[in-house]
Image (cartoon, rainbow, N blue to C red):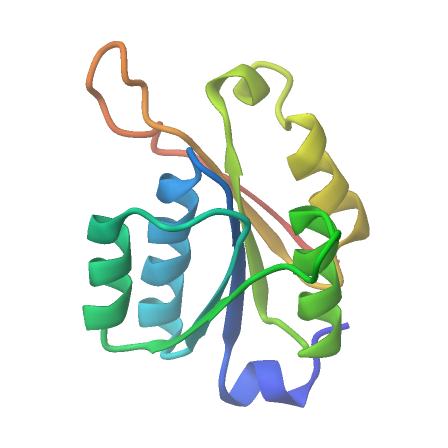
Length: 139
């Protein structure tokens, strides 16, 4: 469950795999809004531009690798529970928007110890940003 730490210094946790840049940017926006820290559990190297944006933002930043052999979903959930995260942010691939949540995002939502914000990816075929909706689910 979310604890006292999350109310005083909100911790926003997001997992990163290639294609999840939109989720990381939303997690950054949430950390700025809440005056908190963002923890990115990166299963792959972050693109240079994204890394620069994270490092220059006026929020706390912690980049972590999942433990060896661990799935990024498992690592994100473990971290959120252990460090009493205020919010988990997950990215939705276009293919996952049609059935509300893709398989990996669904795993996060079902096992999350705190609220989850799911962020649809931008529509690259039209060049338009992500839809103006996202789903937040609480514990």
